[in-house]
Each structure stands twice: as C-alpha cells, then as structure tokens.
Amino acid sequence: MTGTLPLSAGQEAMWFLNRLAPDSAAYNVVMALRVRGPLDLAELGRALDAVVDRHPILRACFADVAGTPRMFPGAAPAVRLEVREAEGAGEARLRELVAEAGSAPFDMARDGVFRLVVIRTGPETAVLVCAAHHLVTDAVAQGVVLRELLEAYRASGCGESPQWPAEPVPFEEFVSGERELLASARAAEFEEYWRGVCEGAPYVLELPADRPRPARADYTGASHEVTVPPQVWEKVRSGAAEAGTTPFSLLLAGFQALLHRYTGEGDFLIGMPTTTRLSRRSRAAVGCFVNTVVVRAGVGGTTTLPELAVEAQRQVRAGMGRVSYPFSHLTRALGVPRDPSRSPLVQVTFTMVSAGRSEPLMELIAEGEEAGRELELAGLRLAAFDVPQQEGQFDLAVELLQTSRSVKAVFRYRADLYDAATVERLAEHYLRLVEAGVDEPGTPVRRLSLVNRSERDRILSFGLGAMS
Image (tube, rainbow, N blue to C red):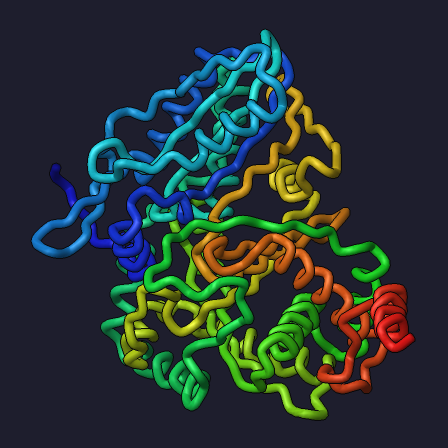
C-alpha cells in the first residue's frame, strides 16, 4: 500500500484498543433507516460511489508500519452496496439481521472500515444500514454520509448534480493541525491546565457492580434507554435558568450527584466526549472528530444541585477552550497506570447530542422509533430504526439525545459488570434525583430522595410488616 498518513491521537488510541479486541463491535458506529417505497438499488449504488469518491477516508485501510499505525486512504477495495434478501422475515429476525450488519467486525488492513447494507423485506420495504468503525467516523460524520447519500440518490434519479455543501476539509488536515498544536507552546499550556483539573483526584471511580471486575475487559455491553418526561424537562429548563446555567450543565450536575450517592465519593473525574469540529468547514467532513474532556466533581455535605451545575458549567466552558489537547496524551502525561480491566483515568462518561429541525434526517434518527415519525426524502418514506451500538467502551456511558420534540437518555454499560435491572434502576434514580434537585434547590444533594412517594411508602410498609 502507498500514500500512508499518520493517525490522530484519538485514532491511535482506538487502533490499539482494536488490537486488544479485534472482534469487538464496541467502536462500530451505526445508523439505520426503515425505507418504504420503490428503492432503486442501481441508483443507490451510484450514489454510494459518488459519496465515497467525495470522502476517500471511507475507503481507508489501517496497518502497522514499523510499529506505528498508519492510514492508507483509498486503499480498500471499492465499497459495494451489499444487498441481503429477507422477504417474509418477522420483526425479531429483521432486528437480528440489522444487528449483524452493524456489528460485524472490520478487517481494517484489507477490506476497509465502512459498509452500506440494504436488507430487503419486500418489493418496497427495506432497512438501510450504514456502519463504519469509529476510526473514520463519528455521529456527525454518519449523518453527513447518509444525507449526502440520499441527496446523490435523488439527484441521480432526476439527472441532476447533487446539491452538496462546499468541499469538506480532508481529515488529514485535522491530523496535521493536531500535530502542529502538540509541537507548539500551547500544548504545554493546555497540559498544565488539564493537570490542574486532575491533580489529587482519584483515577478510578468504582460504581457498585453485580459481578467482580474481570482481569481484562472484553468490550461487550448493553443499553438501557429512557425518555425524559416532558414535565421533568420543563423543570430542568426553568431550574437551569434560575441557576444561570444551561440545561446540559444541570443534567451533568445531576449525574455527578447520582454518582456521589452511589459511590460515596465526593471527589472524582468523569469524561465528556465532545466534538473537535471547530470550524464551519469541518461540519461537512467525514472522520473521527471527537475528544474526551475531563470534568471533576466536588460534592460536599452541603452542596446543592444548582451549585454543582454552576461549577460543572465553568469547567465545561474552560475545557472546551482546550478541547484540542488529546485525551490520550493527558493520560500519558499523568502517568496513569495501564489496567486492562478498565478505561484509563475515566470509567464513566456523560455527553449530549442535539439535532434540531434544521437537520430533519438526524432529528428523525435521534427521536427513534418510539416517535413513530416518517420523513419523505428522495421519493422514499424514511423512518428511524433503532440499533444498539458502541456498548462496553466504558463501565457506564450516558448519552443524552435532544431534539426539538424530546430528550432521551441512553445508558450504555459493561455487561460483564452490571445486570440490566441494575442499570434500569440507576436510570430511574437519575431522573428522580434531577427532579428532586430542581424542586428543592436549597437541599444538599446527599439528602435528596432517590425514590418517589409510592416507592417510599411501599418500602416503609415492608418495614411495618416485618415489625407486626
């Protein structure tokens, strides 16, 4: 292979994780759409060719060169549309087929790290599955690929040129910029800041688990999803306004309060995966533009939820100004010991992804199947098809999905540590704690109730029954 390029720091970290568990789907990023209408597979194949030509990173291979991982853009075989016939398949079987299409491991040294699969269930019904390894994509990039694919499909059918945004920035420009930063004096300034954030904090946060931690993580996981009730979301918005923070900062503070209540720890670190797309040009780019910002929680005996939210917002804003400093470099600078049983420095993450009316396709996917909405695009009727993914990367990873109509929270967790019932209960406690903290802004978080009135009465009745 020729024309090799260096990897970003984040790509290098994922490359080495893949070497530890090459068959894991933990870093596969998947989006799927239920398609109704006369889908022209030949036109879709031509649209796919056009999108891959526009983004050569989708045909990248990755290999070790003299002990260093390198990227070979355009070196993979041409990406072909995969069509799998499943006429008459029931819903359970269809979900199995979609999961298989999204979770199949990539042979990144030979076949590349991107695939597009159509699972046909009838003459005018199918599921479109877009899957790629996190090495070359993120949630924004997957949205870019799907939008441009459908626009190219529409344009091809009309004999037009696709109405795409301006030429996207190649990912190698981002890698070059990152390397320039790391060679500059700003890198030392950023490192000093992040050292200050982490200094004296424990590098391990141990949530109570259902099973002993295995000696080596296997990156298998599961998910639990909850919708934030509209009345709770309205309380969050008003409570954030009263505290002078964003709703995200208040929800982050609520999560910190929950971790404090579960672990008893008052000083701990969590990660906040966030975008590094810092320019308008990069918004239409395909690549892994993600870094982890570290947020430190300090919870004392009198700390309230609004106080936590104000401090969380201060740290998030300060951290976003230094988001270009790679998380993997920070762990090395701090000398965080390697431990194959857990992720380094942060074992729990919290983030929010927003999709509004200006991005109808992404809003459709973010709302999920429960919303029951359809979008007409390129002569097709599209609906969300929920696909569990990116599970098992951390002990616990919470992702908020905000649209113009709803807010959902997805709790992804390591299945070798936690039972589904445990995470379901944790999610319920999180929502109750946030609501209680907004209802009682002057009450310390350590005294807020994790149970509602009916559950509390039920627990008390058990106690009274035992005494009688």
